[in-house]
Image 1 (cartoon, one colour):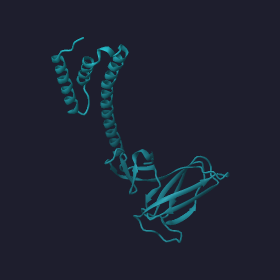
Image 2: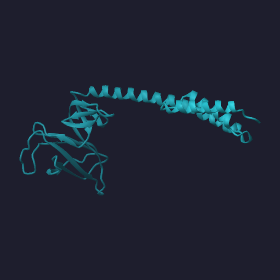
Image 3: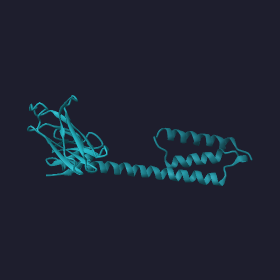
Length: 222
């Protein structure tokens, strides 16, 4: 079998053009794939031609690639729409009192309301409150009922001194059953949503002066 110089030059030109086109774009188009396929067929060794099975597999891969590009584009569009929907729903929380999974709240009007959930009844529940520097300002006990439990701290430290409003405090709960095993699920805070931050992929709500992910809201009380 004889391959003419003209044919080889044409093939080289086609390959160069295809490579140039591919490098100028961040993704391969269907035309790019077809150009590569034609170039492969023109330049393959006649004594070791591509088998029918390999050729079909390559064509299938090209088709799958194009389909995958379309799917990825649709998913990106869907993700963008979903993010906008989440943001819109989060705005509806403003002005409402919510309960959220977190452990930090701001002392307001001389008190802060916390909560905690237990997987089963606890025989011993210890609660401690720490300031923003990590210092323990109050310790005590709490109820051990299975499910949700509420705790309102009066803003006084262990010596009875009333602490100033505005400070952020974190609750720590240790709850164990009669066998000494932990039954604590999570801690919560209850407060009014006063703002929303959409600078990240997951909107954050401002609850009692603390940023809380909208995904952590577990209830609206008013």
